[in-house]
Length: 93
Image 1 (spheres, rainbow, N blue to C red):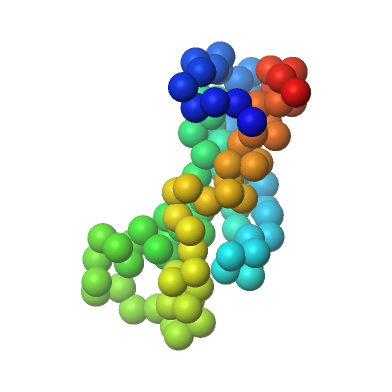
Image 2 (image 1 turned 60 degrees about the vertical axis):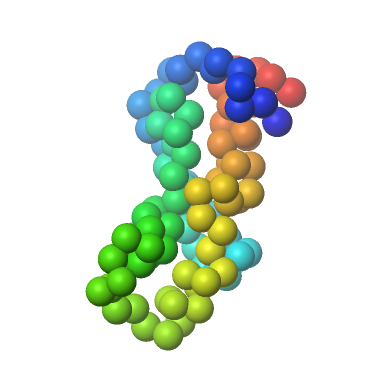
């Protein structure tokens, strides 16, 4: 994998997104990566991040269990997909 300290050239596309199965929460997530290689999980942004910011949010018991299992921004699923894109785009293997 590409070290995070290495400066990467911007991708030749604006944004890409893919649906992947996340084993941590046992559900499908949408992973977005922009041209500057910022990778985000839409599930995390919609559920866990909101819960961390606002305790007022009410979710079902199932979602609350998944929130507890969600790894967050350091998720290996996200990092693996981002690394795959970097290898494809920049030809680093």
